[in-house]
Image (tube, rainbow, N blue to C red; front, top):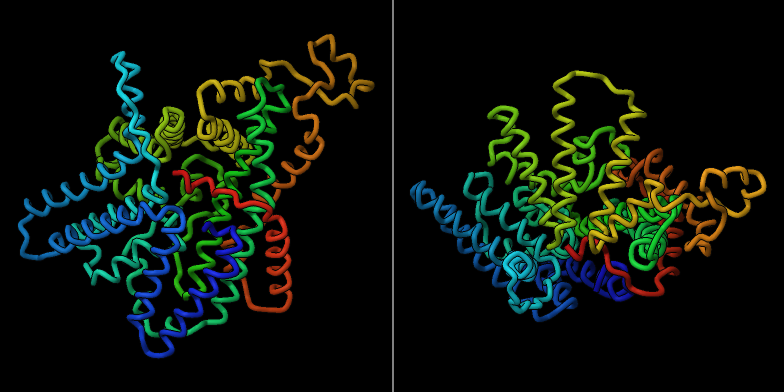
Length: 484
């Protein structure tokens, strides 16, 4: 039951909100938390009831480990050993379900073996609830948060607005909110802001991302070869599809949580306005960037031990980040590209050479756009196909309508017409330009939410977004990050 479905929008969400506040109004605060936890597990079970024991088992094991880790009487050596055991459990669980067949495939290739694949279906949200619990164990070990009752922990891990695709939350960000008596009654300002954010996210997903997906899918998955314009249409379509899809999901998650008076950490802050790769990772999937920094990069040594180790730590962190996104070498290479880009950026900073902001944006955006090709491609061949087209190596083709004016260019091996994307190129190019202008020059949802006030104008605007999106809901399409 994804966010962009009739069942979620018209049944599950309103019923869950209404019953939650009704229970709290009757003074049954604990009943309200039980209701949220049960509703969240039901929500998860609608994707596959067979994986309910998996998430419940993971929650129970981590809760028990955290309970012992949090004891002040536990010796430091035993604490480190127990933390290591907890990390091995979580990483092993994720590795089994997500990477077992990837490992078998590589063993077969390099060793010339024929080991049978396990063909394990990837459980929904396993990457996200595993990272949330790894952070929790480390925070308990560091003394940055404290163990609470099992019900509170169950709700913290499984709360449905962020369960599927984040943000990756930390326990101390949310623990107090579930128990604050001031948050147990409906706040109509929060409800209005939540509906506004949800409507905006729904519009991003159904109207913008799903439209762009048609062109990206054709270029990556259907076309056997692409020309220059088609290559750029394909890459930009995916770059913008991914932005509207994931930022749309995050808007919806933050909006749904606000209906319960819960404020989640922000996850997007206009990443395509970034003027450096470091700036990009401070704006894109902020909760993942924070996790990689706090639980991988800094424990590796961060920037404390000289330039070589700094560059090594950056590269290792992003190789892990790439692999977290998916069990394929294309994801690992995407992580490598971003790690190397950060290494180059750090080296450039040491030279203390200024760069024009427009040039810095152009370099940053085009690098990100090219790197996304490996993130999206199902194979190396698909990625090379698109990149060759973008570089003009498959030839340059211009619209037939320009033949009269620019016919002399045929002497430069430039042809006219014959596009594989002929049916929608005339629409794709202007739509991509408009979308790019929107993400670079307009206020993002975070800025709009900060200035949001309930008013008839905002109500009409939110209703228009929601109605337009719902009218586009001819089928339920997956959010991209649900697959990770």
